[in-house]
Structures are given as C-alpha cells and as structure tokens.
Image (cartoon, rainbow over all chains, first blue to last red):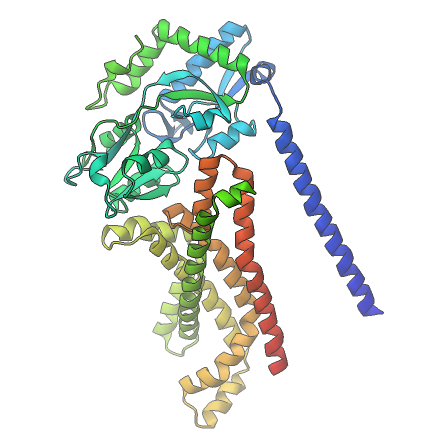
Length: 288
Length: 213
C-alpha cells in the first residue's frame, strides 16, 4: 500500500513537471511570436518618452564604459544623443536617451526582443543583417583592417594566409566572416569582446586582431607597441539599427542624421573623438 | 531543424571538443583530487597545510578567472592554446571539489579499520589503497557523480577562450544565423546527451556497489 502510494505520487509529480515545461515553452514561443509581429518603434518611444539605445561599452572612441560615472562614452553615444534631440524636435515630443551596453553577439537579439529600441553600436550594414533588422543611412565610414605587433613582419592580411598564423576576431562581428575570405588558411580565434581580444593579442594567442580600422586606432593609441598595417581591405559603413519594418522610425532617424550632418553637429563630434588619433586622417571622416 | 542539418559538422566538432575536455579533466581531477584528499589527512602538519591551501585556493576562485589566468597570463611565457588553458583550469578547479568529497569519504570510514589493517601487518599506504580508499569511494560516489556532471557543464568555460567546444560553436552559429533561441536549445540537448547517460551510469554504479557490499 505504502509503495503504491509512493508510485502514484511519482507519476503525478512527473506529469505536473512535464506540464510545467510544456506550458513554459508554449508561453516562450508565444512571447517570441508577439515580438515578431509588427510593433511600431516610433509609437512606442513617443508613448514612453524615451529611446533606449544599445551601445558598446568596451570599444574605445565609440563606446567605452566610464568607470567613474558608470555611463558609456564615445562617438556612438554622442550620435545617439544628437539624434534623440533631433527626433524630439521633429516629432514635437520630449524624448530622453537611455543607454544599455550590448555586445557584438547580443545586439541583434536585444533589438528583436525589444529590450532596446535601436542600436548605435559600430554595426556594419550587411545584406544578411538587413533581412532581419532595418538600418538607417550610414553614419560612419569604416573598413576592416588588422592590428599587429610592430616587429611582427606582417604587412597586410595577405601575409597571414598561412596555417601558422591566428587572427583574433570578436564573435558576432563582420570581421569573423570577412577574414576567412582574405586569409582562408589562417586560423581564427573568436573571443567575446574587444578587451579580451586585445589581451589575447598581447599574450600571443594570435598574431593579429582584425576588426574595423576606427576601432583598431583606439587600441593602437593605448598600446604603442602595436600598429595597423595594410590599410582597409573591406568597405563596411556603420548604420543605426532598428527592428524590421520600422518605416516611420527609420524615416525620422534619417532625417535627423541628415540635419546634424548639415548643421555641423556631426563634424563637431568627428573632431571631438577622432582629431587626436595618430595616423588617422580625420578630415576624411567629416560630412561633406 | 534546418539549423541543425546545416551546421551539423560544426555542432559535432564542438561536441567532440567538449567530450574530450571533459574526459581529460575528469581523469586528471580524479587523480589530483585523491592525492590532495590523502594529503589533507596525513599526520605530517606541513603536508596537510599544502593540501589545505590548494583546496581552498582552487575551490574559492571562479573557474573563469583560473581559465583567463592560463589563457592570458601563463600564455606570455609558455605557448598555450585556449583549449589547453580551459582544460587545465577545469581540472584544477574540479580537483579541489573532488578532494573535499574524497576526504569526507575517507573520514567516514571508522578509524578501527586502519588500526586493524596496520595490526595485520599492512603498511599505511597498503592499508590506504586496499582497505580505506575502496570503501571511501563507495561512500563518496553520489557526490562524485554530482561533480562529474558539474564538470561537463563547466567545460562551457572554454567558449570564452576560443576552446572550440560546444558553447563556442553555439555562439558562432547564433551570431551567423541570428537564430539564438533554436541554437541554444540544440546546444542544451547536446549537453544532455553527455550528462544524462553519465548520471544514469553513476546511479547504476551506486546500486551495483551496494549489492557488492
């Protein structure tokens, strides 16, 4: 009798557990589907009076966490602030800008889950990404390059097309796929963020780190033993990203970008962040 | 399921590296853990201290920090890959826990056993090997099984140092396909493929040993 009771309890417990798991999965898929449905970002930010921007927190010059204030600082953040002010003017609603640090691999999912409204995070516009999210016009002209130690004897990405070399890239960046095209024989080591990438380069886990030149310039200023070689071998301008089918938000943001490029705010920001970078012709980045 | 088909070789490569790292770390941490467990119960004070310090250090530092120590610091002096540094860190970290488990097993064996063995002419090490340790392992088996399962899951630390394991490949696939949800579900199932049989095997071993006793 005792044993039968125990057995019964076991069966009921199993059924309840299975039901909880199944219901949980159903709820998760339902939420995911609801997020996929059209949700107007512009309407949401106007209603809530704020735009939540996903920005980088580990990338010098573009978005680097200021440990004193706890807020990321950089070109991306200033662009996001300027665009927010401009959109507030255009739509005649008071808007504040909030910042959430994102990583290269998490930003797409955070946009899809509407954890962030938009993303200004050194994001290259690519056809693959455009299938899933929307991009504005470009706000920064970038291209991929490599950072190597000064006495390494490597002069361009082509020198690295050899299995004895390892190229360090960051998971979720375009560099991870592009490097394979230009140096198919080189090994790839993908790490989670730029800080780890730079540390790995210093401790000899790879001979080069590859990503956009503007980001590499930030590291080269901090680490005088390292230099950028071979110029850029890809062309991949950055865009501001929103969820799919966000016509109104994209329109407003493009208008705002055009305005700050015209009224000199954009050039002021370029000067603020890039005029001190040695080896970089910052005038070429200015809006014409 | 397209995702699984398209990336099957990648998933399998990750699965292989996770399995390899887990096996190396399991064998390594069993040996190291047993050595340090015995060190902690030896009569010599200084040996006991070494054993204690080792266990306290590696048990109380996050696994990720040990891994980064090998990946970023040790790599300055010795060429060491992400896979190797992750596996070494995993071995050291797990061995501290195993040492504690085995030590508890040894202490649970009545002191009379050792005295009896010694009285029958066995040396300390003979008594340890043939009398105490077999019984200690039997007592410790359920908690050892826990440690093994933890070890397999902890091997995901390799993903942070480019260790080519299951989690690393999962991150890469998620980044390339943008299908985060499904990718990580598949990764989780692959982990279950290792951990579920492992937990059943430990349970089976427990029952078998119980009958043998």
